[in-house]
Image (tube, rainbow, N blue to C red; front, side):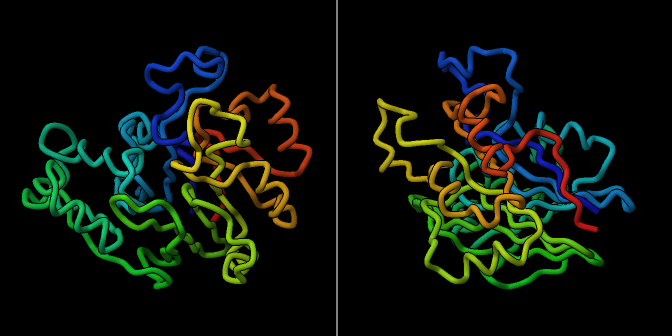
Length: 273
């Protein structure tokens, strides 16, 4: 049993549509869907996925031989749930596929099309889950949502602890800031063997034409400063197309590596058993 990164980019994917920045024009850098994670049970030929990005088909293609057993959603920003559109009659035509999410996320799906039609058409079966509760989804496999601070125009936001037979993983693609003084954060970081963390922006200098206060995320430079004791566990994910750590040859990537952190890549695997 293992987890696999199916996407590591911010909501727009990489390269981002319509962008002419140096990263997006550099065809030598890998392509990636928006951040999503598969939990793979090879022995039973099935998997679960955390988040369904707009590039959903591309993301799950490497798992084409396995059965999609269910979906967990983090929140209601476009890069994290709009891939649900492929579950309807126009494409996968799933039948009562379990979709686990918060109460606010459930209300968003039930109150808006085309998501409401996925429910009424029995393509998905939305199941509400609560923060800090643990849910058994298979023998030896549990998942626990963790509420995290993130801008909530539409819904609240979950991170997830994935608890396997021998190892566990903390998956947090979106958060406004790292609550360094909160003991609960350090408990999560200490107890999990793998930490997949928000790395949307490298530094505040990255998007000079945008007010980053309107799209808050912790900077990679801040994570390096504050999360150093956990460095060997940390894999950075959810990189914006402008983030220089997308380029393995950049000075920013060198800073990350020399500090002992990793930059996530599509297909990267994390043992749970």
